[in-house]
Length: 308
Image 1 (cartoon, one colour):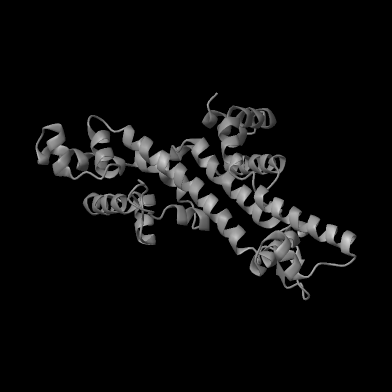
Image 2: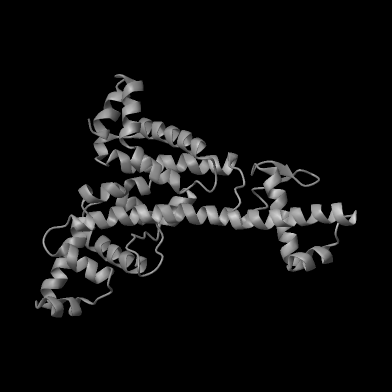
C-alpha cells in the first residue's frame, strides 16, 4: 500500500499498530536520512525514537484531501520532533578534535600534579601545550560542558542559567544544520516541480535561474525569438503557481517556526528557493487566491531571482 493509503487506514482505526509499523518500515531510508543529520547532537537510538514520535504526529495531522505526499509532510513533523528533543534533552556532543584538546589538557594537569606535586599555573599550562590564555579558557569551558552533559542543567552559583544559554556557538551551529536541511529539502521539492513542467520550460527556467542567463542569451542559444523564450518562462511560472503544484510546498509553510521560516528566506543567487517577503503573500499562497496570477507571478519571479 502507498503511504497515503496506510495513513487513511490508521486514522480509521484499522490495524493501527501493524499499519504504523509498515509505514515506518517502508520509509526507513528517508527517515534515516533525516536522523543522520542530527547524530552530532544526540544518540542515534534516541533520534530514531523521536523520529517515530514525529511520524505518529504527522499521521494525526495529515489531511489526504490536500494532495500533499505524506512523506514530504512527515519530514516536517519528524524534524520538528527531533529539534525539540535536542533543545530540551540533548547532551553536549563535542567534535573529536575538541575532545582531543580537552584530553591533552587533562593529561597534562594530571601529569604535572603527579610529577611536581602541585597544580600547574595557567602560564605553565599555556607554555607546555603551546596555547594562548584565551585558548586555555576555552578549553576549560569545553571541559566543563562535557562534564555537565545536559543542555538544560542549571549552572552557575544562582542556577539561573543553563548550558543552553551558555552555548551560543553550539546553538548557532545547530540552527545552521536545521536550516541547511530544510533549504535542501525545499530546493529538492522546487526543482522536482520545475522538472515536471512540459516542453522546454524546465530547461529555460534552469538556464535562467541556475545558470544566470538572460532571456536574450537563452533565445540566442536556442535559436528562437526572445518573445518565445519569455512566453515559455511565463507559462512555466504560471504552472508552478497552480494549486496542484503549490500544494506540495505546504509542508514548508505550516507555521512560523524558527528553522522553517528562516529556511524559506532567499540565500543567494545559487539557490532556487521561493521567498515570501510578507505574511500577506504567504496567506495568498496558502489560500490560492485566484484573480491575482499576474501580480503573484511577478512576486514569484522576483523571489526566484533573490533566492538564487
